[in-house]
Length: 227
Ligand SMILES: *Cc1c(COP(=O)(O)O)cnc(C)c1O
Image 1 (cartoon, rainbow, N blue to C red):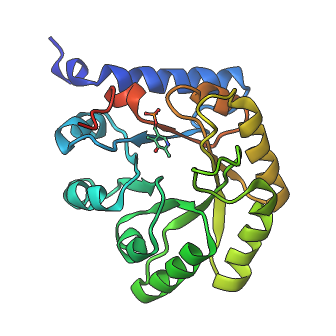
Image 2: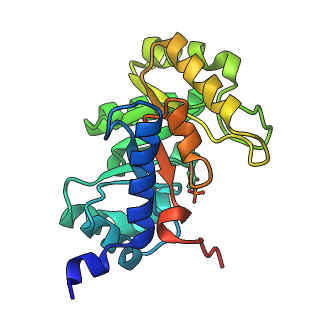
């Protein structure tokens, strides 16, 4: 029996295959979409097989939880790229700058200011995305669509922050396509190339609308237990 292939996680393999198929269906080059494997709530022993299968880009939504599990994994696998995809509190900006390689959830002026301050202090420059609240949901983080371009410009002009792309989480109960299209349109107008959009339930649709990265958790790691 081939032990290596026996250990390759089935959910992970399946998601990689589906991303490749969606790239092809959208006439996009193979490998043009980055998979951000969302490992929130899962312990290192669940994450390790996915790392060992070759995955290097991971997403977490909480700074504290990430501090508990990622420094040791990053030491073992120095080429891991860790993304913060959840809301950032300003008092955690320093911790986030120290640990994450990409922060996808820049969503207000105060966070931009704190990140700029910490990046200067620490001499570290995580890549940054602005989160856009495409559904304008009151309970959801993110800049309103009509304010996004001006906010990106302010990040640059006021705080010296280079924004690489946009991120969105469409409303759970709506067809995601129009939200992905809106994010792509705002990015284009703002001159940004990167689009972080699409989760387990809709990443193929997101790829059709131009996602450059998809954030997939449960389809890889199984259902989360918040108990
Ligand atoms: C949890 C989470 C995901 C992954 O969700 P799944 O449905 O498990 O794929 C993606 N993006 C964000 C911002 C998340 O918090």
